[in-house]
Image 1 (cartoon, rainbow, N blue to C red):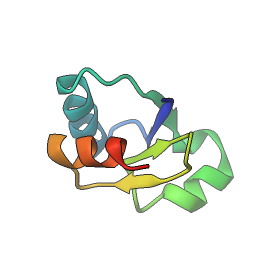
Image 2 (tube, rainbow, N blue to C red; image 1 turned 120 degrees about the vertical axis):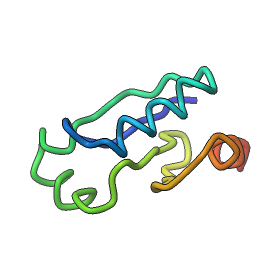
Image 3 (cartoon, helix red, strand yellow; image 1 turned 90 degrees about the horizontal axis):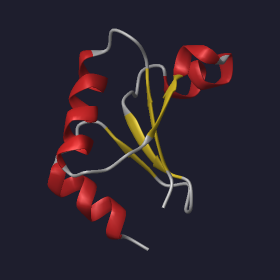
Amino acid sequence: MRLVLYGKESCHLCDEAEVVLRGLGIVAEYIDITSAAGLLESYGIRIPVLKRLDTGTELGWPFDADGVTRFLTKK
């Protein structure tokens, strides 16, 4: 399953989200929302957001290890 973590530089919540994912051994592609205007519009006030590319579903912050596990096991 491919995952994307949307965030931006100097975002302490994004750093915390990455710690949660690393703690679970999960690797997600990091996309900085400042790299495209559309991303900034869509995610500007919602980051960090974890997205499953297979389903398109998103998990917004705040989330913890249990929340991520539930999110990833949903079909």
